[in-house]
Image (tube, rainbow, N blue to C red; front, side, top):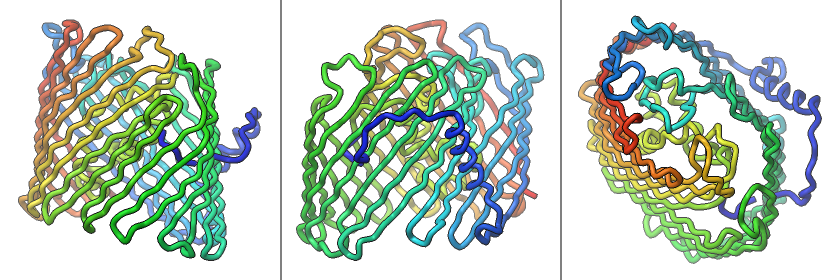
Length: 507
């Protein structure tokens, strides 16, 4: 976690059960607030998706144990949208029922929910954000992990998350802008031995206003407490001050000093203390932006890098970050919303909201599915790089990623293996060869090294699909898929080939 925002008080508070339910009720009320409170126009869009899938390895079983099967899926759902002058609400729900012709023991029904609501209750002053989700995720990357919906039932779990976050904004003329935010959230694991958790987070930020032209400054603080049902707790707090100067339009320099106030399970001698950081941002052109940071924190050197550049057709990206966080905090990162959207959107809808680089960087990280269930704190280092080229009708791209994860407690035991390194690469080609027809070909590989067991897995995939809009509310697609895992643990190896046909109808 890089030095950014905490409140003045770091006193721990116990929240009684009634307070929790009041907060849950607030989230529900915000998600479904009646139009009488604020004028809202609601739109309901029911839909149903049906698919048929022929596979030669329905359970992603080891070599020699493969069983072919015909799999049918029926997914009814809806989208409820509410738009008002000062509110925006969207609720997506889908029931996924998956049926196996030969092995009915693999049949499963799961729920997928994505709901978020933003309310501006007092003009430019008081805001409330609420969110809820229900997702089906990989339980362990040590077990069989498939792309799409091909992960077998025995390695899947469902998780519900929700949060509510009121925020107060105050403007002190042109001198400064102040924001105070509180967030309560929880993660619930269903039919699982994973521990449920909840958290409280308070944030305070005071930013310099328009009265400061070239110089800029910030005073910030945050406090967060995360608790698991098994008694594991972590507290993170920080206060910081930032002072910087803009040299013209292209260059800015800044420095940050502050103090960490932490208390979490770790084998480090120190888990808090003072810190410093210096940084520079350079934008030599409107399409090029570079920012680099360097400093010292309680865990040692603290570095970050972000580089983006765009030309008329090409885009380049490079980034690096490092820090200590829980797995929940990492899942609140750049892929959190994409993970939820991917359950409900077609590839065309995803491309309207995300870049292909973001979509395939997410696909390269299967560990995102299991990290939500792990109780613990980790030091991570992540590199990401991407390139894409857009000709108008076609988009080509390549993505690279490397993530190193080290447990703060170094137990060297457990289902998930504390320390691991993942490296991945993929390439894709999207071709729109008609106003209603799109093809997409992607291929990639992810290598995972489990340091504490000397296990090494390579997960390969190749997928090609074509989709066509039959009518304004009906879309059909046909896809072929190959995936395989190679490992120095022979029992963990598998390969699979499949053909999938899908039809989606909105009403």
